[in-house]
Length: 254
Image (tube, rainbow, N blue to C red; front, top):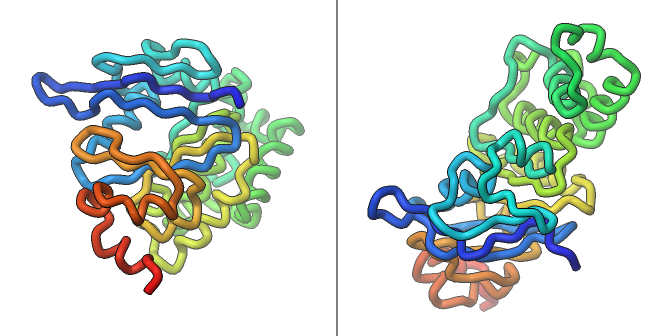
């Protein structure tokens, strides 16, 4: 299967501190991969390098075979590499529908001067209605963002990410700040994502990770120390020492 995203010996240093060291992995269409690791492992830096927020110190990144190592964030988004979550960035005074419509207009190159007309243009409206419906929040379309619960805002940001037509979607801590009883709604929405999108999720909630991922990457001290199935990760001695600990013990059969 053709790789959508490929990292080859990617490193990132700040002065003499190497935060990411020689990281290599691949994402193919339909992949559901989780990136986990302790605080300070270098996960956020790596996601910033992948999304274009930081250039790598060495190594290369390819998207569908094209070298994107030196491309900025907008150029990567146009090619289908989209990051969402961690910090919700929504227009609080606009409705949910307007927020998604803006992303659709950005992708289509429509000017914001005609926003009020464009958001209700048939082709734009049909798309934001479909996206909100797919994620189970169609009933919130005309609600102002400032009136939405935090979990609903997270679902809206996912809709915005999908409006950019991603081939690779980086989900940066999708459950962060969401009340525990609302986290299943986030996972249910993620499970509805189009099957051909490759998804890389960075998450601390291990229950969410094990329900979502078909493959797990473990980062520790800036290095990729494990790549394998969720079942295998709990049995790996190095991963247990570096991160999982008692969680892995709790999941092991008696």
